[in-house]
Image 1 (cartoon, rainbow, N blue to C red):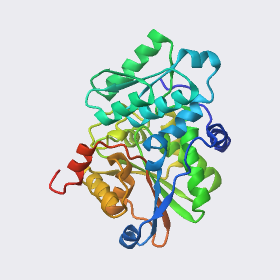
Image 2 (tube, rainbow, N blue to C red):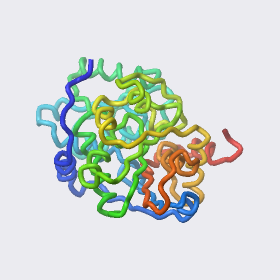
Image 3 (cartoon, one colour):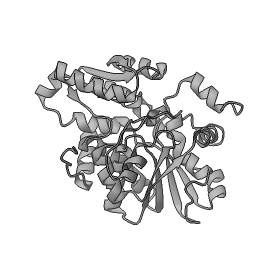
Image 4 (spheres, rainbow, N blue to C red):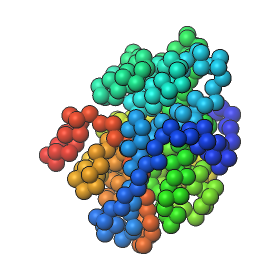
Length: 326
């Protein structure tokens, strides 16, 4: 059964920005002459990999933590994550003096596990995969009373991610389309809420791996569905898209496109070699969609590809960047 959906509008995004304050970076935007020449559009890269904790996730976490009561803070917080949300929870909870625990799973990046612990969170690795991790987190909430900080299906998380949309509109008022990496859908939903409220003419395009297409499947089926993510873009390994995210995407996201594993590798290589951005695979999917022609912008349009994160282990990066791999 679908949960009751709460309203998420521009007022909620503006409130999230106020709650976050000056604790996060206003990340830079770079031009890409090569992508512009290839596509015939004016392509820019929003370098959110330079955000605190190395990804956009801290926006949503700080927005959510600002809503907790003192009693809830005393109980501590818990989340589920392949790594980026985990680090954001650990970082944000540490700032607030809140105990935190994150459920990850077997096969999660050792670098992301280590970083999460370094920020101060306990890490639970009992789950075998992403689907089991969400079930495990629900069990721990029941056992411990800790407050769930959901990685994507929470109005305050979505509103926090929407602050990235505000930045892009402020920095690039001429933008005509924004390409957004999609896992559970919180980032694309938040950006769509902000952008469509202020600039309804701007297209918002979600980009998912073919092998981890939770939002695409949810939209195609018209309802929440579970998938089995199996992509090199581990930061997008959500086993389902959020109920709120699907509802927002139906109304405000112009399209969701899919990229192959090889296309993701090529996008990541491009960003390393041409743009000098040391991103993770999840952060490269928007660029991959442009390189592969999966999304074809209108000639002359200003397009922003969000590079959402940069938390990648050196061994993983070297395996992808080697053109003989994959």
